Image (tube, rainbow, N blue to C red; front, side, top):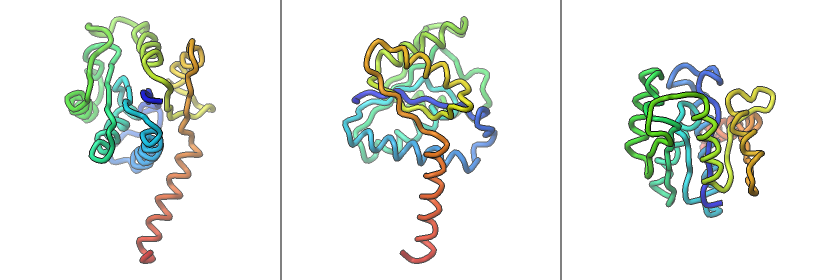
Length: 186
């Protein structure tokens, strides 16, 4: 896969309300590991719509990885000013990401008009990518369910790679093991 769409939960769907929530570090580390594996298998571009939460965190991870890997990030919001009703901290992150992205272009050159824009966004991202990476929990799919439903209807082979609660738990264990090794002098 040369182009992958990444999506997942918004912060409030994960009960994350502060930028320093320790779970963000776990999510970003899990994304980093999965994205590195994809880059080493030929990934060149990551596409996101730029929504707050997993997608903005993905952009931050990609921008860190760009120091080592040849990977690009494309941010394609469904409409202009999607961040206008977000908390200020997320608006600032979004502004920074939109300026640093390798490609940034809203799908609709207008403000929010209706839910059809989200459906069009999902279809466009699926059409333009070779597969996706989605942070989701099938017991509590939240907003990711709409993207996954659309991805399953794709008229082409479209791999859906999931990051599950199990994957996040595995990252926690890895981080704890690394921390133990640091203190043990290994």
